[in-house]
Length: 113
Length: 115
Image 1 (cartoon, rainbow over the protein chains, first blue to last red):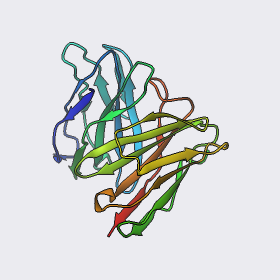
Image 2 (tube, one colour):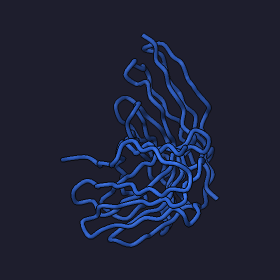
Image 3 (cartoon, rainbow over the protein chains, first blue to last red):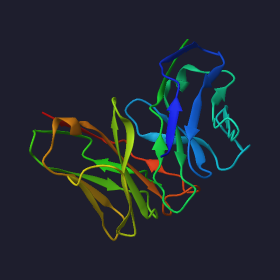
């Protein structure tokens, strides 16, 4: 079956530091890949997505590139802010007819001023 | 445009009881999916409804059921509650049936505590 593995958190950084959150996946076929963010007390929000190999998703300074050869979709940001503190989820969706999304366990990011 | 709303936001029940959670999708969205989020298991897909029909189902026992109404609002029911059902239940809506190109918009969730 499909699976998503994320690095365990929490990840603790100082403001303006570089962020990388690793995500690798296993899937049959050619899935679409997503990063969602969950702020305290809220539901998940789509941060970015990529639908085919070598696609780069980007939003709000965050980027992730769909790497089929390494089955990875690492999230990066050049300079984090305190307001980026949240839980980040990597996810995939099957590209076939049946859509049952698979989420990683989430990585908590804490950014200190 | 109003976002996805879920009611109630918090709920406390005892073992053996049953509970119904409600989700109102974004106007115009026809697909509603439900997820269970727990610290131990993370985020797990329960089921998806599209045009009043269950289209996909995750690996949960039959105690978990749902339905969707003609206005796309959805309800989820859990019967014979167990302690392990304590979780944050998230609802997400999208324009079309789930798939690679249909972005999901999540509600804030219902926090269910089973005592």
